[in-house]
Image (tube, rainbow, N blue to C red; front, top):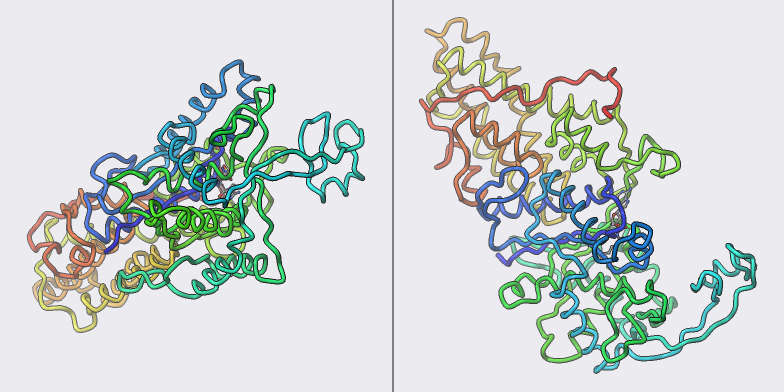
Length: 561
Ligand code: MSP
């Protein structure tokens, strides 16, 4: 199986971490944990650390060369670098809090990134795909910035700040020859539609796919002819103003620096551009939000095509297999905004984690988020509903019921695994469940990856309701074998469910493993999850009770704050 490289966007270091950042990063974390689980890995305690699988590489980081970093730093009386250092730390802490197990954290002000980017730009200048030209646009002299044609027209060609007329200005600028790659990009994206990127572990699409379908159509709509892709400006001038001095210089021309987006996109490549990490390229998935689709689905692959063509040295630079653009969270039905005060920031997320557990928060984000379709609502009522249904009354209750019965009827020891129940085909069940997980994983459908685990819990609930072991147990002399068989099936199915739920809820699942003495060893998922197989619950082994996993929540209680 090829190595798997998963990325999140790198976040503007000026922002405070909020639900948007945490969402994408938790999604990527669930995928990374699934990928490690699939291959066989030591299970990671919540909060990271431990052994990460050598064939899975999960990257997140911060985007630090934006002009506003300089302005904010000045307002706080510190250097831009010190300001970036401080805020990058906040992102690292936020993701550690969210239980994220990234393998590296790239910061674009790091030397390892800047040096690589300078090499890439040099190669692109040599090949002529980055060239010096003239940029002409409407300029606001008071603000010292260009205004787009549309914005200028809307403001009647006057500054929205000072009211003074905008001026047409022309200056030297470096461009990327995007126009040259239009046809190739179109063909690649069209060729990548509708296919899973892996089938039976083998990549199926030769190049590049944009997912989900709606995002793919959106991109194709903008790049298919008669649409025309213009070359894009990739530099900004350097002047005496300190704000213009922040960023990576255009190689050999100190009067220009690289536009922050171009610098940022290259993080995905620069981080793995070392002898021991190149094997991870191309990335399996760039997970992003829909607002930054254009940069990832058009500019980025074009830059990579250009780099690959620039010199044999970059032969290894293939296109990522997939760009996946999710939707946005809204808050209680409204767009989040600072002025409405409804921003779901890290503090709010922490309040939910404190009250309902971090695993419950991760579960809600991973299963109820705006993954494939429309935007999703973070609503307190919905959170409590999902929490009670899936976790308190679902997983938590089922684990405790089965544990209680085993304690009561079998002295807290796994009952003998008598021949399988004719009505309960454990092996068939788990192999079909594993198949659904694999398909969903290949499609980056995180909610669908987790659904089979919860489905197993429901099956156990239904099986208990149908077979009524608690009634049969009233006459253990007559029904003891039958009760043993039923409870073995239940416990073994829950063991498998806990494996499949662990990428979203690592600490609750670890609590089950601890109490049940079934912490999984390093082995691939299909072996671990074999019903009654090598790693199954063994008759006679003690099966204790984990502390209550999820207490029922009262829907009438106000949101935590
Ligand atoms: N720095 C750029 C990305 C460069 S990647 C080479 C950037 N940073 S960001 O911090 O502004 O945003 C990062 C991500 O957060 C985006 O994918 C964006 O979609 C996501 N979100 C911001 N608000 C969001 C929601 N309300 N909901 C879900 N995700 C949202 O853009």
